[in-house]
Amino acid sequence: MENKEAKAAVSREEKTSRHFIEKEIDKDLAEGVYTTVHTRFPPEPNGYLHIGHAKSILLNYGMAQEYGGLFNLRFDDTNPTKEKSEFVESIKEDVQWLGADYGDRLYFASDYFGRMYEIALKLIKKGKAYVSDLTADEIREYRGTLEEPGRNDPNRERSIEENLDLFERMKNGEFEDGSLTLRAKIDMSSSNINMRDPILYRVAHLTHHNTGDQWCIYPMYDYAHPIEDAIEGVTHSLCTLEFEDHRPLYDWVVKEAEFENPPRQIEFAKMYLTNVVTGKRYIKKLVEDGIVDGWDDPRLVSISGLRRRGFTPESIKNFVELSGISKAQSSSDYAMLEYCIREDLKPSCSRMLAVLHPLRLIIDNYPEGESEWLTADNNLENPDLGTRQIPFGRELWIEREDFMAEPVPKYKRLYPGNEVRLMYAYFVKCVGYDTDQDGNVTAVHVTYDPETKSGSGFTGRKVKGTIHWVSAKEAVPVKVRLYENIVDEEKGVYNEDGSLNLNPNSRVDCDAYAEPALADAVPFDRFQFVRNGYFCVDCKDSREGQPVFNRIVGLKSSFKLPVK
Image 1 (cartoon, rainbow, N blue to C red):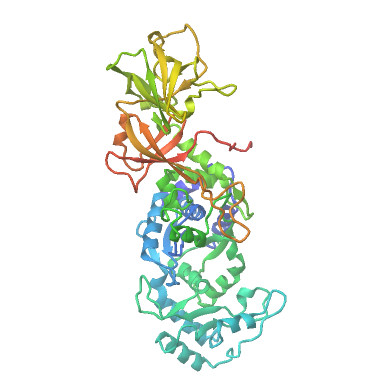
Image 2 (cartoon, rainbow, N blue to C red):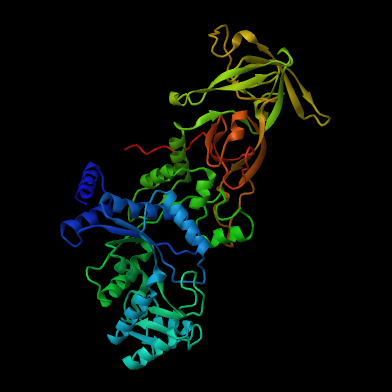
């Protein structure tokens, strides 16, 4: 343990800039409030996690690592109406994928239901809680507004004995859903509405994913969460800013429950990302309406969607770090997330040849029936990745955009009379093209100069354009998916009626051709397709020998790191 703490101390000293949470933890440790640091990530299993949750996961885990402390993964499963085991399993996978190692420290709020019930009995006996028969609408009416104080619940002065009897009968299933609640007795005139006798328990005859039909009363989140933290020995309960007004209730619960050395809640700003959909309600609708291919659709910024698209844990960690930790609400540009994945993949990905919108190229003077193998660099920026051999022959596939019968100004690729270099191969000059009956170009004819082979040292003349290609004879057909944001960035995320402003081009499917080596690619293999971007083999729809490629990100970036 001493060695672990020493390493943590060195890690802290190496950091030149510390965010406000680190400073608060430093202060707590220096003053002896806590002797260690213990954090947790407490998701509700009512959906899949998204990029915003990644910030909370990495922050909580990062603080535990930095200070040589402990980290828990705990499911706040207090609302069985929306929770599923499917969501539990997906969240566990996402947390592990991001590298937040919780080991055997996996917990469920529902494991503490018995302890929460005992604490509720203690509160009743202390005169700090009472059973109410007001309806939900009546409770809202009695609560008051931001301008007006609330009114006392008519049941507020029930005797302790009556409250204990009613609460036990609630637990035993004698009352219908919504008929009774257990409320904290705090202050109906408090300026903080959360402190105006909040509900602690409600009656709900529901089957729970973890406890089955054992319980028919369930604790409310604001009551359960601080108890969970305290039971587990959490020291710093790091949560997002919307819980700042709930902090007095958090502190009230752990105080009245009489926990020794209770946890401390600290709030930080959420992760907001421009022009993307993160709300579970909207994602759920996209899934249910069949607009996306499940919660892991690569167009979504769910963690499983980002993973399937080809993002790496390292790129998301870098993105969170660049976004920063503060109390000020702000939005991060999606282009910054793209920048992070480009920077991560640039040195590690092999640069392969694939043609997404194929057009046949015929080299008229290349010997028929002959072929050769050419040497291609896997990654010029990383010589350690070596080279490979690619087949070349008389007929090739090129990108349709690399030929124009009537070129626009400054067009440097193939057009009648123009000469370009075929990457890794030869200079070729366009001598004609074929069309169908509708005038569509079906093939381009060129001649090649054998003296201009790449690597030959030819210096006789220069060309302004270089295009990529694949051999028509050896190329393998592959499915490629090009993604854009699911919403229209130009018009904003939402329409005036609150519906999502969907982008009709958010997914474009291509019947592409690729060099033969790509036929053996397996799920999550990543490559740079020359001039077309970075791609990842889809983990859901690919089959052996039939990979489906998702474009992770294009090659060009509009994002620039701020100058420090």
